Length: 168
Image (cartoon, rainbow, N blue to C red):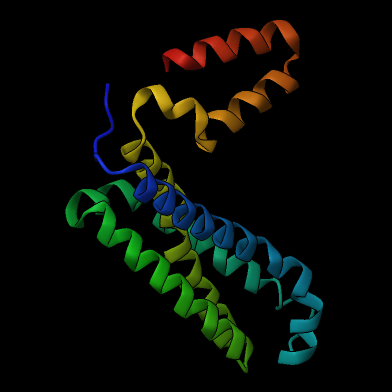
């Protein structure tokens, strides 16, 4: 079974780096707000019970958009959706940086969650598209879960799941 998209190794490596950086930024940005909440509370003049909406808005946006990823991908294409997601995520991150009210921050975080929700599933799909089946154990999406399962469930079950994941 070959890759869906054929490309030279150098271009595949460059695309892998770009996709992984986009995913890394999305994951970091979705969690870093937890650390910044006290600073945001002071800077935005928010009450302790309302500042948590900064986190909640992101989660709600991501919960709405994640199930739609496959459907939108089938309608407009993976490349277009990834470009819109990364562009929208970048713009909404900038809006979060210049937000001067809690309402503006919550709205920007909601939009950030909408755009960010597409990045992780799309990055995994792109990686599976550009790597042939025989090279997939080398890419992070196949290797990391296997290592986690092996360490978490012990040696026997780890060997079982490592072998069974080759089938799936």
